[in-house]
Image 1 (tube, rainbow, N blue to C red):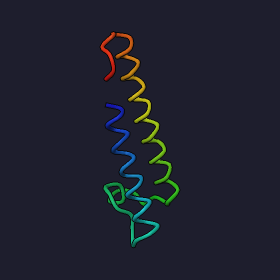
Image 2: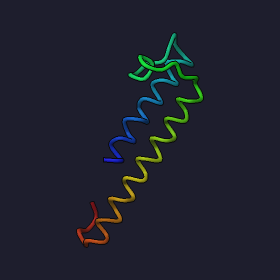
Image 3: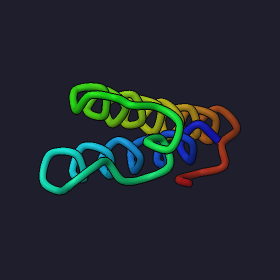
Image 4: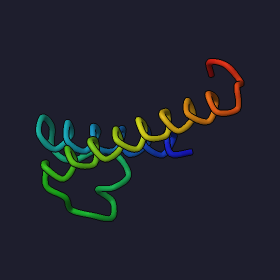
Length: 71
């Protein structure tokens, strides 16, 4: 679940940053509720990437512990 949530947060961060820097305004769902600076969207991307890596590492650790093989 962490990996999926991290992927969604990464997408929101990229869409917000690209839309705000290269086009008229930020894209995605977050600009409907919050007015964030470009640096915040980069931070969202980094947080999403950390969640995705954390989720993948936990999945691999669990598979190694249970002996389920490569998942």
